[in-house]
Image 1 (cartoon, rainbow, N blue to C red):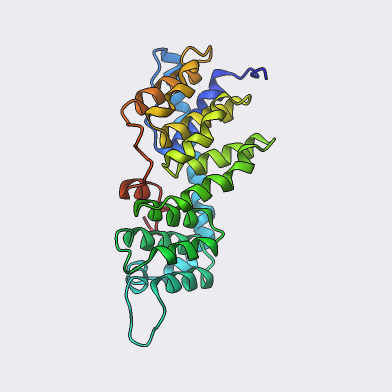
Image 2: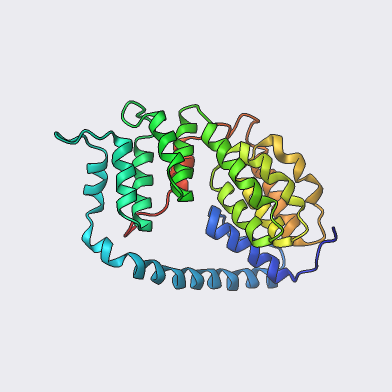
Length: 273
């Protein structure tokens, strides 16, 4: 498939937005001073977009946030009380079911992450049960990541399988959304599904695939990117080189099991944070 032509400004915007919104990438530095000025302007635009989005969340959750003591809720969800026979998994299930707000998901994700290394309190079986009965992608991802930290990648593999249809979608936006979500997993198994899209015919999808591969891959995935280092478009070639530089420092065993830093990096923000 022939690659459509895009302006450098469009492609750099795609790279910057993908990096800033999903992976926290530092500013792209190119030799050309005009390109640097473009990037500075694009960063300002990204900041403006973020400011537009924040009031929407505030309108949805402001009243509920004011009524909640976040730290007390976290403690309650992590503590057994006399007369309450529910397991910690059941308490989390009920909390999410009774409070349909994004902040509820953020709190639940933080509690699960806090209990990641305490399988006697929140068991693997409860993680799986919670996963099977949830629809929120962020909560499901954190549940899968915690199980992976404990040495079981079964839920991470389900994450990859569930993303396959979107990765093959004829709509670029759907492919991009799936790439962003898989990138947040920081799981090498997701990199195997992401890798083919670095050759996608849509340039924006291609850039997002490179970003997602950098966030999930290891040295075993470098060969997927090598052909792009001399790409005629500077955004693609720069990012391809950056992916290689990042992955060559990670052994083929890296990211095959999640760690606490991987999980913490992608937790949804708690209200007020």
